[in-house]
Image (tube, rainbow, N blue to C red; front, side):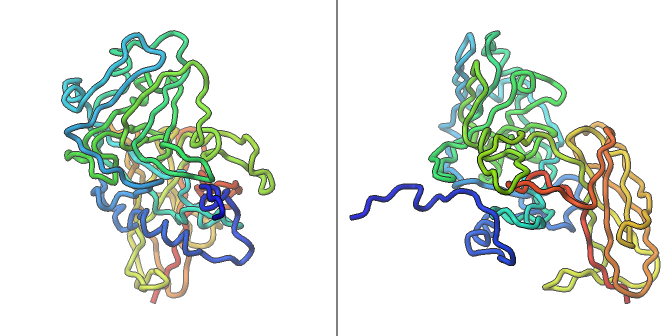
Length: 373
């Protein structure tokens, strides 16, 4: 019998051939990992069942009653904490917008073959838990520690590498308070649902979703940069199509984005919106992992002119999306509405997106086809 290996079923990442449509593997991923219905942007806090979900491997069969979190490596006092011990720490709640790093991947040409997100891989929740810095302070981080490595209970194989899902953060980020990283055990006031990391997950405000390790079971402080698959191979910006093994740049903070609640009502298949002539209220949400959103603009003529929208101030929730609204004078005919955000650092969503092999950080402006009649 021919010897088999995981490499036979877990192939390298690839770029779709010209004209290649979404294949069965991508369709299966899309069925497992759902996005936010854009009309749910109306909710300031996303109901858990509408919040986007990306699960790399399987949802573990986690038993909260028997769960423990270990903290070890370059610490003075290794810890083993069950849920009761974590609940004994001071609890905090942060409203955080979370977005998948691959959001927008399916709109790239050529298309990286992976989870085929359009623009819907986002959600905002109230996460309750223990500040990571307090747990690390109790463990006592040694002076030679440079990163904290977080291990989830989800296990699988990716591009031929069998692994637990692991990511790291620099010690300064893990122990900092702006933003404050959470070991979360509740979402919107209730225990974490299974698909969102029950019973524990990491929440890293301002960072793309790959950093928010779910089903968290282990934290290890290390004295050298972590080089695991999800850190040094998977989530990197590689700009050249013919250099899959280039080191690239790490994917970290969320690029600015605005999304619109699709106006009017939709056609079932094309999702083209239908509105009637006259004033049409437009609304949506905007966010950035680099701070507040300063400006949101809407165009109905392909970007030749822009309507300035009213943007709600960030208020107490610095890492949550902000509401925006304006009114569009709709005239009969076909239109494409475009919306873009600019954050406090001056970064603006592009009208044309630069390409990368993983399809990460694609914050190309949203386009909404509308028929006015």
